[in-house]
Image (cartoon, rainbow, N blue to C red; front, side):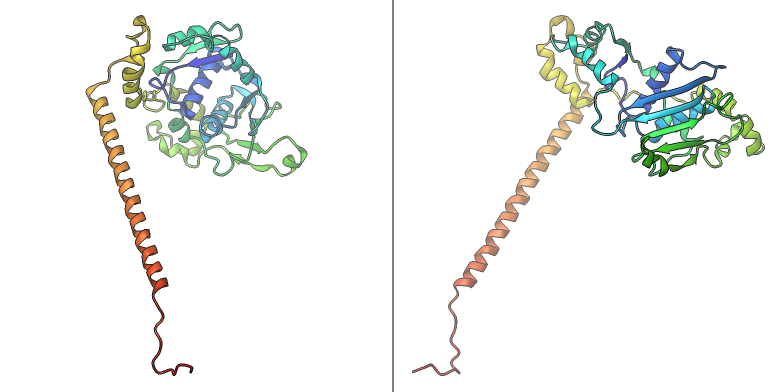
Length: 325
């Protein structure tokens, strides 16, 4: 198993991060190569919408098929509550060594993870994360209200001679599961190409959609290397609150030879200011909440007091009504 390791200052953990590291793995392992069409690629994912099961990853499937890397692709998303899969089991191998020792830096973590014979540690850098989401949305349709309820997404068939036919649109099939009842109720295959996609590429000088379609694959390949189209995602940097916490609370406890690590650097003036402002705002908010609670309780007490006085008020006798003798 390849374990891509990085801290939150290098990259986030959303769809772009998963797409970037997924494509990196396919290329490094030689699973995709220019000029070669593979057979049927099946990839299993957890059912996590924020990282795996989203429009960006489904567009990656469309992209891999249209680039003719495979005759057929299938993305399987395991249902919530599924049993352990191969990756889940290998995660236990990751824990075998590091859970028994103190780790103070990312490098310490990488060395501990690398001791497993079943795991290959891949330190990720800023240059590994690309904005696939923005790039792919220029070419492919989203699948609104079709992703959450379905678990099997596929393009192509093994009967295709060389994968996707150049210049033509193609469709993606969606299934809830492989059960016969779900196959019978399958969603009608959806078109993949975005409508009027070619008008978003004025620099290509295509006369019409037919001409643009014939050159679409070449455009996709060329634009993947264009920094104006497929850009490196700006690193988020360490959260200022965490920087202050690591410096104030944890740095005094780490060994001397680890204190100079980037995780324990001294906060900048701006980071101190952000944290102090946030603490001040939180304190003021708490004071305001307490004040509102106190005022609410006083108002309720006044209402209860008025009700009790009304209840104790003696009844007046109407003088016009004669009393009984």
